[in-house]
Image 1: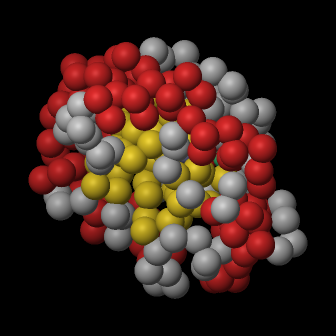
Image 2: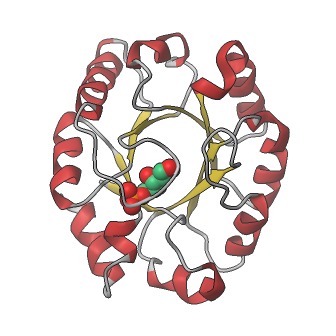
Length: 213
Ligand code: DX5
Ligand code: ZN
C-alpha cells in the first residue's frame, strides 16, 4: 500500500522537522481548501513550493476548491506531481480540466465526495491516472471513516479489471490500521492519512504499519 501523509495535520510552523518526520512515505498529500468548496481554508501552491525545498517525494495535490483550473499551472510550477480535482466542482468542465492538467505533463486525479455516486466517474475513467474516494466529508481531518466508501472502491477495482484500465485507487479520510485493511482488501492502492500518522510519536512506524496492512 502507498501511504500519503496528509499535510492537513502538520505543524506548518515546524515545516522542516515535520517533513523529516514523514520522510519514509513515498507520497505527500496536500489538502488544499479554499473555504468555499469546503468550509475550511488551508493553504495553496505556496506551501507546496516551500515543502519542495526539503522533499523529493511524490507530491499529490488534492484541490478541494471551487475553481481548480485557475491555479493548476502554479501547482505544477511549485512541484506537484499529480493534481486531483473534484467532479462536484467541475461538472461539464471536467473533461477540459483533465486535459489541461495532463497537458502540463503531470498525473491527473478525479475525486468524489461521499454523497456522489461512483457511476458518475465512468465517463472519465479512461482518461485519468487516479481516482480519489473521499471516505469522510471533505473539510477537516480526524473524522470517522464512512464504510460506504468500500463499495465504491470495489466497483472501481472491478471496473478497471473489466476495461483493462490502470488508474490508481486512492482513499482519503479516517484511515487507520483497521480501515486501511478494509480499503486494501476492496482494491485500494493508496491511502491518505492525517491523524493516524501525525498523532503518533513515531510517525515512521505508523507509516510502515499502514504500508503493510
Ligand atoms: C478531509 C481531508 C482529510 C485528511 C485526512 O478533507 O482530506 O481526509 O486528508 O485526515 P484523517 O486521516 O485525519 O482523516
Ligand atoms: Zn485529501
